[in-house]
Length: 143
Image (cartoon, rainbow, N blue to C red):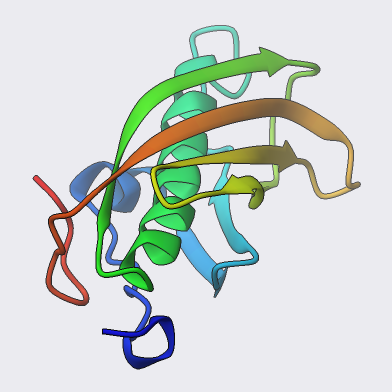
């Protein structure tokens, strides 16, 4: 199979993504963009929960890796994620954007930015995924 003959994998939301209100705006090897409301994802002090930021950031970064992997007839599994929280959010919509730092045949690394409606950076994640020779069917999610 050649690189051109494979269709990229299409994102399917998981249960947590749906509960968090995640919406996909864009999906390609070059960029995955999603949104998530702050409402419903706050911690007890009324701020966007850091765990929600990590969960959505890991999901978007992993989707980006699987899209790349699918063009190689492979799948991807996360092996490392780290995040830095820069500022809080009490309301509005968060935009999550994953862009590749490295797209290899064995590993991918993506930077994932969470920004508020004013474009201010809320959180920066870096996620590394291992590519495996085990393709997944188009439009499905690994369990």
